[in-house]
Length: 427
Image 1: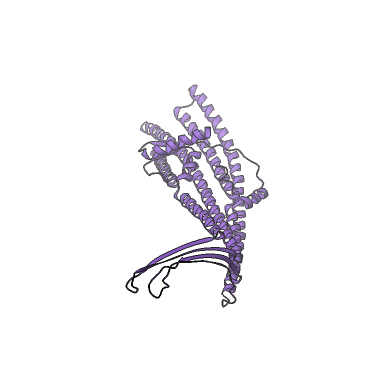
Image 2: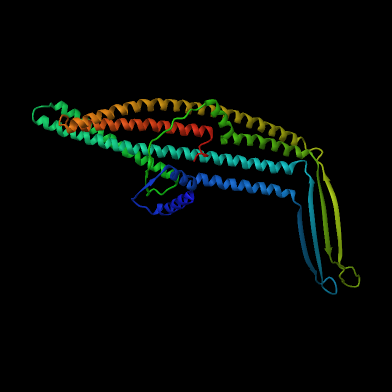
């Protein structure tokens, strides 16, 4: 019930989303992924190809059914006899293939393999899209936090510049100190401007992934949390070999190549089919004038066709098919090695990210305690407003570094799930 309500609300949101102009639309990660899978043109194209592949299977199976043909003609002879006469010809033919050397059944299985290949490519496209959307989403979330931090740093630097100018006018600070603060302020302005530009770039990327209008203003709604898990690399690799769409794709490629070889072999095998034909016609038989003489008859037959020699054409095509099998096997082995490397890199990135999180959390704890200490001193009149602002900036920077470390962990976790082929299932 909750799922239906969520989908309904999401559909309503999708209907009003293109109408939004200059208004911020806040998206959660599940909403962003839902829209991406629903609207992305690459996914839609692959789904259309999958539907065509399904039709091809039905088309191949139709060869198992008999064919029925009806023909009818009517002609009229004028001026040749003393009386004009009409002639009708009708025929009805039924044909059923009894044996085709395995060509029909292997054609069906080949198209089933094509369906599996298309499905695997679609799954791969979805996994890539989910990964890119999730990574862009968390990148935007982090960029928005960085912009807020840079804005606070700019305000803090401006306050320091105002304070140093007062001290300079009172002869308590040198011009060099003033220039150094001005440089820091200029750098803070540049950092803030760069972070705003980064936000716009990431928003454009997300809108492109979600196929949204450029006029729509979006923002990311979420937070940086993580739950460390014990991960066994060997088990993950076995899981990847069973779930990765690329493995399924090349297994189907090998199977399809084998079916192609069987279809080629059928070229040297006999074809047997049964037929039944019914004929009905009228024609002139009288020498003194035209007269109609209906003539109906049936023909039942059993036909066999067996190519004896085709100039080695079938043999050469079979050699090509065997090379296709070998090529597909080599490609599968290459993909397995690539998956192993991809999984290893993601595994190491996860371990590295966890190490960074522990360091960042220790720094966050230190600067949080320091901020609380300065805050108490400020309430007692011992610390200045700038001291409190500096401590607050240090604390916010520590929290941002912690979130950045968690961001790296989340991206590494996404890459690991993508490498095992489970990213689409978990979405």
